[in-house]
Structure formats: structure tokens, C-alpha cells
Length: 276
Image (cartoon, rainbow, N blue to C red; front, side, top):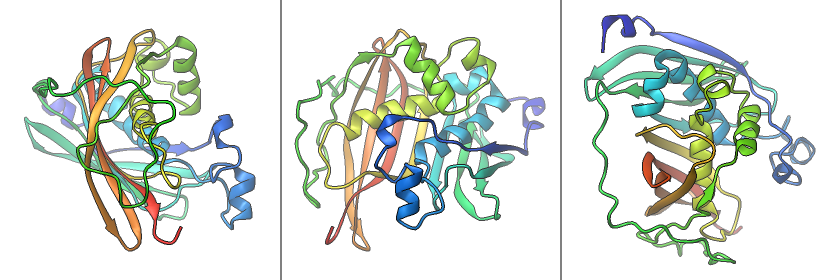
């Protein structure tokens, strides 16, 4: 990586985060009316949206290279509300040729840290993991119910295994307010959309006892995706644990586009609560 690239950091991005009018939000904590009735100032923004906006810093710095081989990590620390103004700050680069990283902090208008993590770019494309042990498994209807504490590591994930349409891609750009030319002009699917698609396959592999709360994610990209490609997720429940009355699971998700591996996600989420 050249010294010219390194001069792109530190950098920052200010985002006014707005939820779209996805009908799935109605009646949930992502609905302004419901959230305010429960004592929140506005609808809670899903972690996937905060992740997507963090990824914009990487795309603006590294462009196409980021989408082809970049990495990223994020932990979500405080609620983000519909209408919040977020400042995303990325530090000077550290690391080596394997992954040159910038530490990222996301703060709200009150200066509170709501998320943190990193964005990174290796000098060369990373080696592809061996996926020969994973099969593309169709999503059952209905998916199996999971009781609190009963999710099992090693359980395979299922997938919708479907084509991403141009209309779905454009709606995703609007939802994330994504305007970069690589996406809006060149039609490359943005990182937030990819993570959300893999996440959807994982969450729809089971019927959970409560709404899923994303707490952390790490990602590695291996190639770009365009609308019109068939997307399928393979992977497993990697780990489970309980802490302070909350039940967590970690999923390892490999996203394929027309059979090519394009991204790996390692996500941590809360799936149930004691005495719920």
C-alpha cells in the first residue's frame, strides 16, 4: 500500500441517519410510534444500518479495492435513534500488508460513542477459505423453533437462494442513503446490503423466542456483487453463550453470488432473554 493511500487517513464522515418506510418495521421497536410508547425518543435504528454507514468511510477512502478485498469490524454499544446525526471518525492506519487498519468510532450528536470498530484493506487479495464442507440448504417452511438455551453450535444455516433484483438493489441504496458512484452508477452492491442479506438468511433459518439484536460483526470481502446474481448463504451456528440473563449466538456466514464466494461474516447477536 502506497504512502499516498495512507495520507487518506485520518478522515471522518457525518451522517443524518433516517430509516426507510420498510413495512416490516410497523409495530416493532423500529417504528417511531411504538418506540416512543416504550419511552424511547424515536425508533431504534438496526445495527445493520450503522454498519452500512461505517462501511461508507472505507469505500470513500479505498474505492473498488475495498469492495473487492476489504475487511471491517463493528461493535454496537448504545442505541441509535431515527434522525440521529452520527459522526464516523477513522484514525490513521496501522497494521501490516496482511491488513492495514483504521480504528473507527461512531458518536451521536451528544458526543456519546454508539459504535466502534475498524476498517481495513490488505495489500493483496486474501486466500479463499475452503467451503467444501458446506452445502446450500433451502429454507424450511416453517423454520424450526429454537427455545432459549437450546441453539446448538454446528447447526447449519439455510438460505432463500434467490436472485437479487435491480429493484431490490435500488431500494437498498435508498434505505441506506448510499450515493457513491460505485453503487449508484456502476451497480455494485454495497457492504450494508450484503451483510443484511446474509443476516436475513441466518435469522430466517430458525424461529427465535424474541427479536434478534445485533451486537457485533466482522466481515471480509472477496469480490463484488451486482443485481441479477443469485445469492446464497452457507455457514453454521459457530458458538453460543449466556451472560447477564441474555442468550447470545455467533453465526459464521459465507455469502455466494452465482457460486462465487464474495463475503464472510462473523456476527454476534442476542436471541433470547431469561424470564422473557
